[in-house]
Length: 411
Image 1 (cartoon, rainbow, N blue to C red):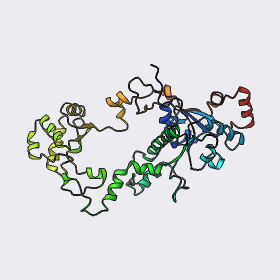
Image 2 (image 1 turned 180 degrees about the vertical axis):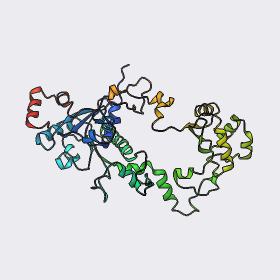
Image 3 (image 1 turned 135 degrees about the vertical axis):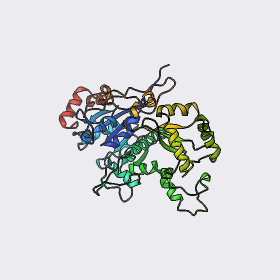
Image 4 (image 1 turned 120 degrees about the horizontal axis):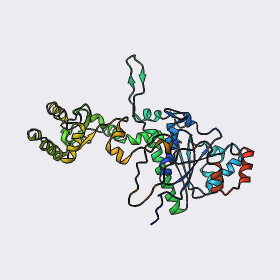
């Protein structure tokens, strides 16, 4: 049986700069033909952030892998006409820059649906198309500070600095954007009509932190309506993971050799399994806990004993123990060493630098049962696929392409 990638046959035009280009990366890895339309100077994301790998930033290499690059000088009327012709046969157009940029060039959703009523148009920007911040310039960490994800850190010399953290907005925004593209294409398939959807990376950062934000909002209601968990005698814990600080049976412990493990026996059954496995049933007899969600919060006497127990085995031994005795125990890795973890090697092992220009992780989406995903291609150079796209997609011959180049349409 011949298999095809899930998005084979889907064509997406992307006009992007910097990190928001990641919106279409996952779609390309699922088989979509993503044509990155660049200005004559190209996406300056190639020069932004660090590391720089053989003169191209890792940001660009990762966010633009699997795409084709077509240079169009969209200030030129002839280039705009080429863009419209491409949009006529495309499934979606992605505007990954300040909202309204394409509309100001006569290439917005209202313009393009005249040539393709089924077109899906998705705009992704920092603060979105509405609200008092919509026109503000911004960069990636702004969406994390705006949403409350980042807690300022003070240096010893008194200066406030950005702490190390996972960037949420610039990663979550593209994921929601990819979902919007897929939803719009499905709607067009079912109804024949396209859609205009937009994503703010700031909104996405807040959406990923919904548990803390919504918990704080819930706690604005009276105690009679919103309480803590039964296992905490209904006392309100701090919102989100801040409520984990005093946990004991759900906590990080140091293992033999200096590595750490995360112990997660918050259910009574798991706690019993652990105590039996380490032959310390007296701990369960003394502190059996509640059936669910009991972290033995604040029980420092138990925590002292668990500290000694966990120091008796290496982290690898504890992982094997948890698997054998049905007790949730997880490795505590760092972004530097997670690549050495056997689970990472089994599912997320590196794509070699020879293929993508830098060693990169694969898509977390895996094909099962005979399906196939395309081999991921290296991010393009500026205009690398000019002739290929114009020939294959629009059927232009060499003479017409040469004329476009001579006129400045291709930059």
